[in-house]
Amino acid sequence: AQKVTQAQTEISVVEKEDVTLDCVYETRDTTYYLFWYKQPPSGELVFLIRRNSFDEQNEISGRYSWNFQKSTSSFNFTITASQVVDSAVYFCALSEGSYGGSQGNLIFGKGTKLSVKP
Amino acid sequence: NAGVMQNPRHLVRRRGQEARLRCSPMKGHSHVYWYRQLPEEGLKFMVYLQKENIIDESGMPKERFSAEFPKEGPSILRIQQVVRGDSAAYFCASSPTRATNYGYTFGSGTRLTVV
Image (cartoon, rainbow over the protein chains, first blue to last red):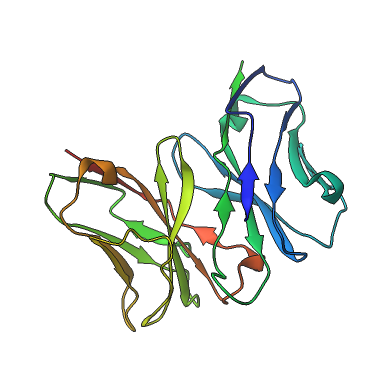
């Protein structure tokens, strides 16, 4: 069965520290997609990144970077030089690529609450 | 604003009343998804609709909950005879095609409080 585990419930860091949010997934499909979303205190869900299972290249976007490792079924997210505005709940999600069944369904982890203190 | 629009942003209902949550997808998007965020449980898929069709309602509670996406107008998530356990944030997302591999855009959510 598909499953996404974010073992870190809450993380607190001081501004300018680097922080890594862990995400481990389970799926039987060979084709799947992984996502990260940010939920700031205002409550909306902000899309950060999508990665397909055939692309294991790491990605960097400004202070954000993602490390995808199929061997360990992990898709970790690192924020470099964290800022107070990074304080939010971060969700990792999985979507399977098969064209049968419940296509359209994202499986979310329970989220990691990141607090960045000044 | 060309994003996914949800209203109301906050909704308070007394136990036993009905709640209607609306979702207008992004322009050109004909696929709508509803998710529920209960405290401590993260987001859970509820239902996937196309215009005038329910494609997948495997995540919908068996009773009191229904969803529609008519040919004209927004998608509606309807909860009849609300109970305290229905208090949650309800998010809608839309996409232009059936495949989620492209990701989709969420609305800002409706926070339902049942008193």
